[in-house]
Length: 408
Image (cartoon, rainbow, N blue to C red; front, side):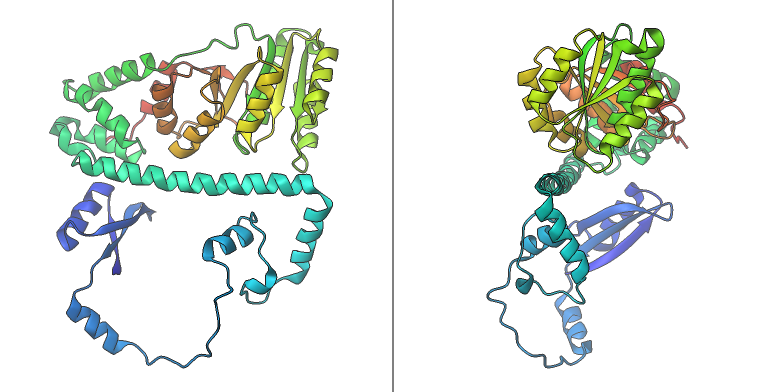
């Protein structure tokens, strides 16, 4: 096998070039953007005569001492131990060049002295491994679906008039399944403007909305993966509620978040929002704290960003009446969105979008919402507590994604 690199202006042109040069048997290894172009790496079979020539060109091998690798661990175990730090591997079983002994000693001391941090790091590493696997699975599914549709860019199924619109969808990362769903609608329109209006209606009507900001009361669980912006979203909601009523009626509880500096961050957010903050590390502490805060009209519980599924399951038993909201970054991948939706076992009351900036087109989120029927409630764009959350409907989300498309 031999790897070849193809550069073209877009995915369709790159695939046409691959088919022209190497035929149907070429295996696509990767597809990404490079210098404002599409780069595709393909693996091809090398003809026998070429292999013979390459073999003759090889430098004569150098005799190396033989090693007995019978007791060595496999690659997966070494990767998870030294990259993801999940599986302990004995130092004498790993071959490294110039190891940092002081760093290893610090890590060993930290793990031994603080098992909570060790468990959290283990869970976070496992989530990263699972997410990488799911990303590859989504890529394989998209590739297979593209082949089945016999259209790398989806343009062969639409008229020449509508091809610029589909090419814009390709460029902005719309999933193949969503493009296939909209192909009949696109073909039935007379011009691009009518097609955009029709697509806005279809996507908007297919996504439910929860009017959360109208009268937000009771207990609300705010969940999401690390880095999704859930803590900031919690602070925004608390601040907006505090501006409408007495700030003493609102409270933020940080639940079971043992990350370094997490409690300080919560205190800072609470101070900026002008509301009281509390901390609970166990269900018993949380139950007692909720009894003391029973007179508050709104209690927002900011959960930890790791092992979301276990936390939601635990809190469901303790607080079955609480509303559960999932915070998702607008630029999240399809695998990440589906993983987070699964964490709530389909029992989310709403989805909140963070980082919904003008240049972000959340097609994976839209695709997931169409498939799950979970309503959306609010969104925020700026990474600051000063940016108030705004109500978000399906039509708003569709209009945001379809505005200023790069239609040639």
